[in-house]
Length: 343
Image: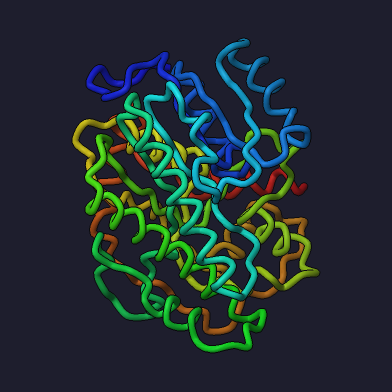
């Protein structure tokens, strides 16, 4: 699969992907390998993730993917060796513990980002740095009212809630996670402004991610897929904790990362992975039509809608088209791909 001739990094170059075993990171690796890039993927537990080496060797041939262990990535210099010889870095790894204490989650997310940036700055071969942020870094938590969501939007509400005095009870983990995405992304932009390194940085902000993982047998229901699984089984109400938002297919999300890495005109941009509006009310209605023999729980009452006008959405869709995609994948296709794994 080819890339446009004006890509700033040519096929065959080596790209570092941190957190490469996760739902997002593994698909980023997959899409890079499809386009004939070489990938070095970091994981905390190389033995547990050994399946990745075998899988990608079988899919793309030996010598294309390299699995490396970095178990203390927040420590200064921990990525120095991993970034050697790389032309690009895609930093996906983050703190997904959902601990309610911001001193743990937020500070760790910032440290992970700073460690990746500092190691990247030491390597002159790097041209691009892409940070996996999140829609939660921008979401305004407004419902049933139209508003503009712009590249200048940040979720200040969650930052304020996360840093309120203790006790740090579990219900606060939602805001703490959001704050970790806000503040780690802001830390990146501050670093870029103050240090003016030799590489270009972009961020990608995906909302709820759907679609099959790279290898379900090894990855299972991960991240947002776990929430869909809890909806499917009906026993765990954890899915109800998420508010109305947007969604994006996992492959589209990975391609936004690839595009942010390669497109010559995307510099210091926040790429908004907001493909389609999502509510549980709408999804349950769609799923009932797809799986007529399955019993689904009732949707939340008076759930509402996120009525954001995502002003940068066309800019994100243009990246997909630059890479040869017609645009964002239809929501039903992506949702069904996820749920077919549960049948």
